[in-house]
Length: 99
Image (cartoon, rainbow, N blue to C red; front, side, top):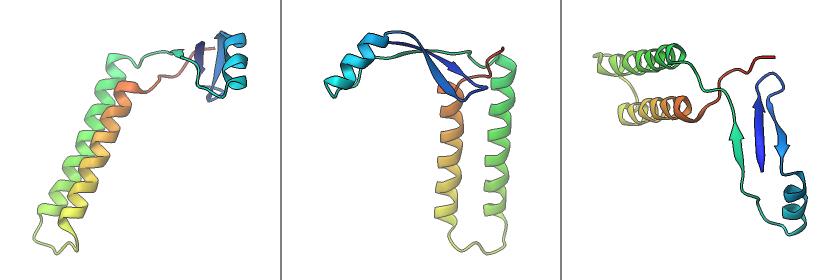
């Protein structure tokens, strides 16, 4: 099945495989799917990466301050998880579509 991601509608449109989708639903199984989308530009990726890293560095610098933080390990783990999630989204996310 071939889908196309439309950012303005925040949904997919089926381009090909309507009958395969109906057959998969009838058989209670998931059909193989290929999604077409715009990839973020190099500039967008760089800017988003810089923003994610700046947020991470800011959080870690707060944790390094002498001020008491209740759960340093938990906060550092949460900051690391957020950074990993943001960088993963850059790899698999979709850019805005035109039209």
